Length: 73
Image (cartoon, rainbow, N blue to C red; front, side):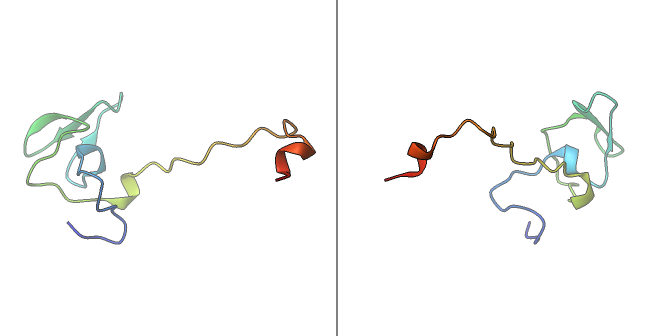
């Protein structure tokens, strides 16, 4: 699958599928074609929905824990 929104190294997963409906606990997806599926599983009916992706933000660096010696060579 090629898409400008989908990383080519990432495997398709039901949690990103436009066909399925996510369950409340987010461990399972209710699929009209396959029934209850694990969120990490996939099937041939997979269609990527970029709006289902959860953006993981980079962790913030702790401020004030650095000394001037940390920045010298």
